[in-house]
Image (tube, rainbow, N blue to C red):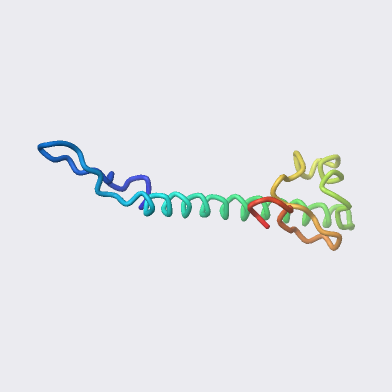
Amino acid sequence: MGRWATPCVVMLAFGTVSACNPADRAEEAVAEIDTGNAAACAQERSIIEQAIEAYTLLKSDSPVSEAAMVTDGYIRQESVLMDISADGTVIGAPGTVCT
C-alpha cells in the first residue's frame, strides 16, 4: 500500500471500527523504509563512483581517500553511507544501512 491508499477505517452508524491489521501496516512501513534506504545507497554509491572516475581521469591516480577528494573538490564532503576501499572500489560504510 502506498501513501495514496485508502485508510483502514470503517465508519459505522454506532462508531468507527478499524478494519486494518496493525501488523500489516507495520510491514508496509518497513518495506517503504527499506525501499528508501536502497535508493539512498544506490544514489550515494553512484555519486562516489562518478567522483572516483573523474579523479582518476584527471589525476591519473586512484583516490587516496574521500578526504583527498574533498580537498581537491571532487566531492563536497565525505560520504556517511559509502567508503572507498584500498583498491578504489566503493563499499557500504560499516554500521550503515548500505552494508
